Image 1 (spheres, rainbow, N blue to C red):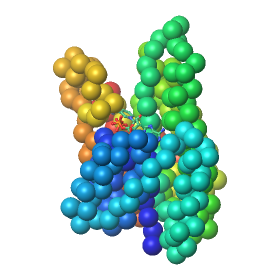
Image 2: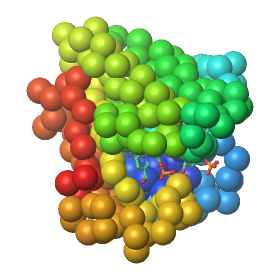
Image 3: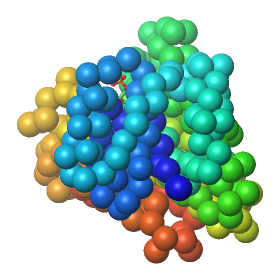
Image 4: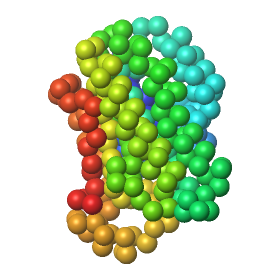
Amino acid sequence: MKYALVTGGSRGIGRAVCLKLAEMGYPVLINYQSNQSAAEETKSLVEASGGTAELLPFDVANQREAENSLSAWVENHADDYIAVLVNNAGIRRDNLMFWMQDEEWSAVLNTGLHGAFYVTRSLVKYMLNKKFGRIVNIVSISGVNGMPGQTNYAAAKAGVIGLTKSLALETAKKRVTVNAVAPGFIETDMTKDLNQEEVKKLVPAQRFGKAEEVADLVGFLASEKAGYITGQVIQISGGL
Ligand code: NDP
């Protein structure tokens, strides 16, 4: 059986992606760090729409915890493998470079960039063995264009873009595609501190995006139909 793993699947974009992949027929592994009730709610929503889901909590930034959780899952699922991986877990700790604390820098890099590395390295070998896989990394237009106050976040996302492009070249021959989705402003907990009325004036589409709109794009990249798209960064930003 082919499974899908969504890191940070408990809330926001990750939750919408879990629902989309379940609708496509994948049993979904919902990873999260600490918000168990939100993860349970995602699981219930998947089940209510006719899909199946399991919770797989671990901190993506903690190498040992991430690798141990994934190898335990692999050991217990001899006939299965994770064919779709969505590296979505991410955090913001915005500050101007001048005031940026070590902790703000390393927390964002550890979660966004190192977390994606630990999880992907653990799973890509199984995709290569089975000669099919889909890896979708959620980055940000901040990692493409830069954003004041986000040197840490933009560096993490730009790092994942480099990882995406390079890994795509390593895996294309084995039908494993690796792409990145770069959202603009999406309505989730991550953006709830922003003044939406003001910020949306900067967006050509004059609104924030919905998590479901990002999930539709991720679903397409994860589908069989997208087999000839790899190493790409696709922006979903209302024209920003
Ligand atoms: P949310 O803040 O709504 O949700 C973040 C998710 O990531 C939660 O499920 C959270 O788990 C999980 N998470 C955070 N840290 C870890 C960790 N160390 N290990 C495992 N899981 C973790 O974020 P969004 O849905 O808005 O963002 C999802 C992704 O999209 C992020 O990578 C973000 O950078 C990116 N993005 C978002 C944009 C936006 O406008 N919202 C724009 C561009 C990119 P828990 O519930 O346990 O805390």
